[in-house]
Image 1 (cartoon, helix red, strand yellow):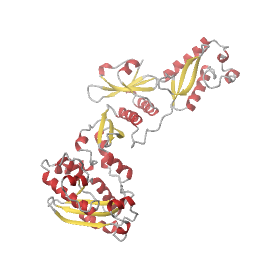
Image 2: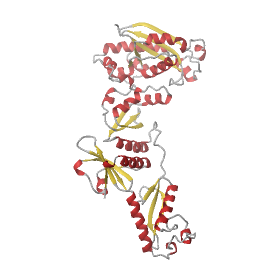
Image 3: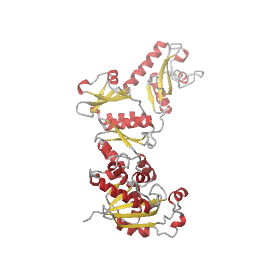
Image 4: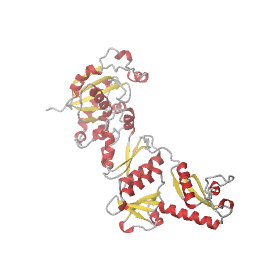
Length: 459
C-alpha cells in the first residue's frame, strides 16, 4: 500500500485552539514524490478575526462571512487526513487546532505526525533560520500567497519533497518510529536533548531562546516527566504558548524524589521562573531571639527571621510565636516583659498574678532568672532535634544526605556510606548549604515520621 502524507496549513483567529477558530485550511496529499490530491477552503470561524490577523493573512470578516463552517467541512477534512501521515511546519500547532475542532464534531484523528521544522534542522543543517518564509528564501522555494493556507501548504510540500530527496541518513523514518516520540516535541527541542535526560530523580529546567530559565520542575523519573509535558497536547493558550517558548532542557540529577522536591522549591524561589506559579509566594518567617540586657537578664524577643542572626526557635507566624511564648512563660515562670509579650513601661501582669518572680523589677536575681531561661531553651532544643536523612544516592557508590539542625533544614549532598558523620557541624561541612523554607521543613518532618529508619540523630 502506498504511503501518503497529508501536508497541512491553516490560518486561525488566534494562537490556541481552545478559544480560537480556523479561517482557512489547505491540504496537499503527497506520495513522497509529488502532490496527488489537494483541498483548500476558507472557513467561517463564527467569531471576529482580530485586525492584526486580518492584516497578516489578508483574510477579512467579509471574506469568511459566506464560507462554510468547520462543522460543514469536517467530514471531508477527516476523510483526507485519516490514514495519512500528518505533516506541517510546526506540526503541533496545526494538529492541535484541527484535532480539537474535529473532536467537537465527533471525529477522532489518530495519525502519525512529522514536523518540517524539526526535519529541516536535521536534514538541512546550518541555515540561518527555519521559519517557513526564511527557510524557503534560503532554498529558493517560491511562496505564492505567503500567510495564506494554500500558498504555505504548497511551499511546505515543495520543501518536504526536497527533504525526502536529501534524507540520506533516514531522519524521516527515524521520526516516524513509534518509539521515538519525536513528533510530540516542540520544534526547537531535539530528540538528542530528550534522550540525554536520565531516568532518575531530579530537577529539570526549560529555557527560552535567550537561554533564560522559564520553568523548573521535579521528577521521580526525569525522562518520563519531561516527555509528559509534550505528550499532553493541551489546546489552551498557556500550554501552547509555553511549548512554543521552549528551546533547551537542562537538568540536575538527585538521589531521591525527596531531594528533588526540596531542590525544586529552592530553585523556584531563587530563579523565579515566569511559567511557575506554585512556591513563588514570599514566606514571612518569625523567630525567637535571645540577648542579655544591661542589667544582666536574658531577654527573649520575637521578630522577623533574619538571615545572619542566630535564632532560638523559628515560627510560621507571629500569632503562633506569641501563643507558644505565653505557654512557655507560664510553664517556666518567665517574665512577660522580659519575653517581649508586654511593653516595658507597663506593669507585669504575671507579677500581679504571682506567676512572675519579679525579674522585670530586679526583685529576682539575674542568675536565678537566667537559669530558668536556659532550662527553657535547652528543653526547646530537645524538641527540635538535629538529624540527617540518609537514603539512596545517584549511584551505588554514594548515599544522599539531608541535614537538619534544630528543626531547620540547612543543606544536602552526597557522602560515602563509610563516612557517616556523628555531629551536626561535621554533617553540615559535608553537604551543600541551602536556605530553609516552611514547605521544606514540613515535608522533612512528615518524611521522618513515615520513614524513621532513614533518620540519624546528630550530636
